[in-house]
Image (cartoon, rainbow, N blue to C red; front, side, top):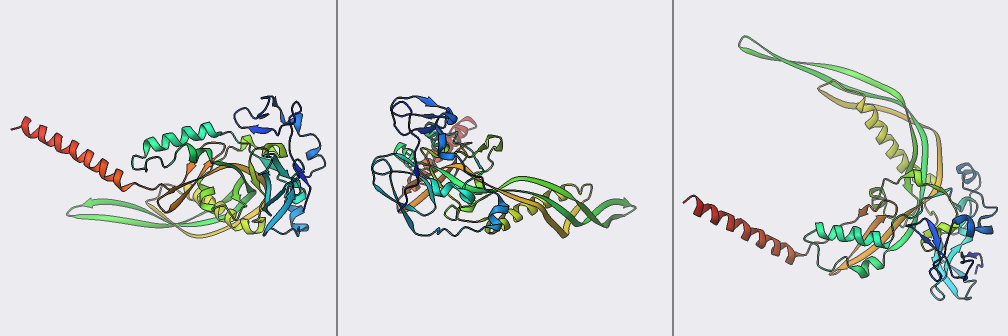
Amino acid sequence: MQDNLVSFKCPSCDTSLLYDAESGKFKCPACDNMYELAQIENATSAGATAFDWGEYISSKHNESLTGTVSYVCKYCAAEIVTDATTSATRCPYCDNEIIIAPQLEGSLRPNYIIPFKIDKKNIQSIVKDIVKRRKLLPRNFLNDVVIEKAHGFYVPFWLFDCTADGTMTFETTRTRSWTSGNYDYTETSYYYVTVDGGVTFKKIPVDASIKMDNATMDKLEPYDYSALEEFAPGYLSGFVADRYDDNVETCLPRADSRIKGAVSDTFSAEVTGYSSKRQMASNIQLNDTNAKYALLPVYLMKAKYKDTEYQYAINGQTGKFVGEFPQAKSRFWLYFLKYLGIFAAILLILFFLFN
């Protein structure tokens, strides 16, 4: 068992503080006092060092990422059993917000965090707008109970910086047509065009959690990086946070693919004035590669329809909503018959008007 647990307490009444997404401050649910981060972080972050990729490469950590780990709540002495990758949770017995300090030290400590800007009220508004626009959604599918169970979750991400240098060759054509006498002529000229240069990339995101679906995380982008803050454990209060379990080397190929795809689009956009173009060869090298560790805000929400469970993700900063929706067949036929009746009425009116 481990005893390295941290919770932020209200200086006035000793109740656990929660991070308030709307104000960007820490709120006491008991006495309603509000505090800035600097007022309450105290010594919990003292002496902590931020993650550096060079440090990670030279000194591999040996902690286990599988199975479960037991912790003792310092407030009620209850045993908390959690996933070995969890770095913030709630004690199920005394309801204190718990930050698991060993998961946030050394190479496990994030460089940056984007605090939540969307709260439960915002989610309710987002979902109601979706329900209004999706006429075939089953009734009472995304209801208030489902929204209330939405979990605020800090997802670990690697943010890659690099310069992409190289060359790309395109086969291009120019076509001209003319008529002379009784004949039409078409002339096609072929050219090989080479583009070389470099593109600098900053903070290309790749989620570092094996448990999260990569495609879903990609669809939640973009995040506004102007809101990146230096990491402080206080931001985790009131939310769940996992540390990375997908390391830099494993995630680098995904970043590499995204970067080279963007370079291809950039170089291709430089080749203009031709009737057609086709990429023939590419030689792109990534230089000055660097990665930083960040926690980005996501709400996760589940809803069930018949025997299928649907999972949704919401960008905790922008409110972007991602997920597939079921369709109620009864509502489909209801709307089909409704619009069929309207169409038939219009035809009937037109018949009497023109006969």
